[in-house]
Length: 224
Image 1 (cartoon, helix red, strand yellow):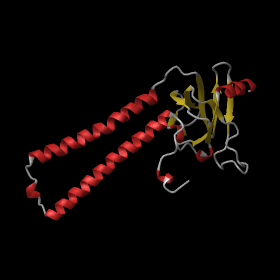
Image 2 (cartoon, one colour):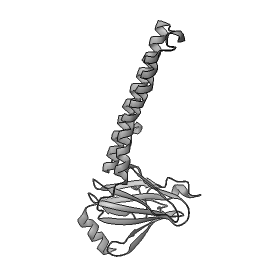
Image 3 (cartoon, rainbow, N blue to C red):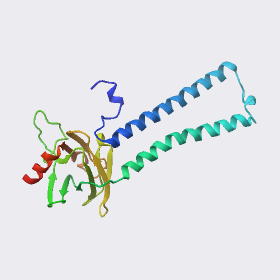
Image 4 (cartoon, one colour):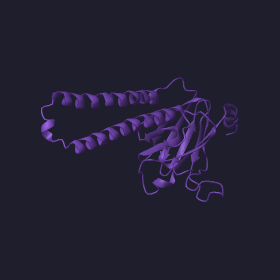
């Protein structure tokens, strides 16, 4: 990974993450424009040696520096509200997976056709080509290009199920069912970690999601 890529967000693996990256770039351009404009104005005032007497009781100037920030906030708020709506939208999910957080591991329950539950623990001694502190005993398996509903909860304390490349972060709260959706756009393995300080082994409950095609997913379901 190049040094420049370290300043950017992770490559997207879902449409929601694509929208989040576009919103990030859009907001950064506005922030850079504001910063450049303020620096230019400060430079002009220093060169012309303007004093506060020249801008006191200037109604046009006061109107402009009230309207311009308000319009700028509208340009930031509109795409933000659009993304919030997309993240909460649920359109005919084909698969439902219940995610339960425990101290300190995850369980995934597939109950559309038959009730199947798998436990996902961190591997203490990963193999040579496996990622340390990220590999798990049983990955969560989902098909790509398929709308999936996630129901997330916890059995003990507050956890947070997070995968950065999917743009997904949902709290797992005891006694409450939170709902989210996933649409994977490509095959691969995507890693995440619990993003809530849930106890002494908080950093040892990683998340590993494997995206496969629908045919392989059906075969996997039949063999488990």
